[in-house]
Image (cartoon, rainbow, N blue to C red; front, side):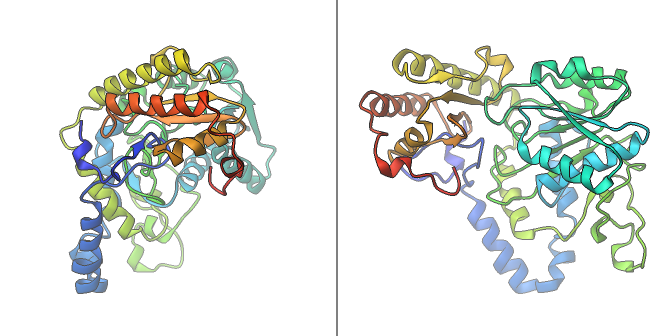
Length: 392
């Protein structure tokens, strides 16, 4: 669809956009412009003259259409872990009489870690209650303060029903928080219709902004002026350069800013978002499902050693497909050595992302051919591929 817009090395089939997207062709030029034409020439003046200070809101408004959010309801900055913490802390202050945070056993661990850390800080008998993904809807009741879920399961690609669960949460007065790390840029998201109070996501996966790129946070517009930011950083102050001794929250979404924005990473994001101009997320979704269905059919018919752990119904998964194999790490390393890049998640999950912006049918079929060769001939069974690296 937009393969010519990405800078992917010749011979590489990149099936790991669900973990880190590739750079756009224009990314290096845009970052170089920021360094040489803005930082080098303007230096400190860049905050005003190059628009650095406004980037978190400007880029938030560019991301908003990809997640079905209104202009002015999304801001960039910090990391996804920080944004989850902000949203959860704010949610608990909205329901001070309740003590339960509800999540599922498939949620991304860092979201759960942030919840655990917040609970320890608050020290008021809060409980992080984890249930199986299918059971979440049955555990929503008047004891729950906040529902904290990742829409697409990072291991299996299983897709939660955001609209249905948010509606059920609201029927019990529960604040809804959605992690869109594996959703933004992969599947259609309609926050305005689903109506959760908060959502957050990263920009280095399907939005292709690069390693360490800033996260985004969404706050529903009708509550944005009342949300209490737990992380009251100077960039979220009503008058950051007034240097007042005490904190006063900025209006609306601006109060969810914390520290100084990462200008070079935001320049990379700006270039990456150019690729999305004129692209229909619904078309991206349709093509992603076609590619993933093709991959599943071919792998299941030719690699009996691998067991599908993603939902078989394509409407119930995101843009990734996961297979389990007891030697999954070694098999993935063998694939990577042959130019097919996916990734691995413990204990035995091989993950493959299908991003039609830069992956097509020919890539999928070639990837399967290489996988079949590796599995049929046990080419993974060498010590080099079994030695785990720091990042899997």
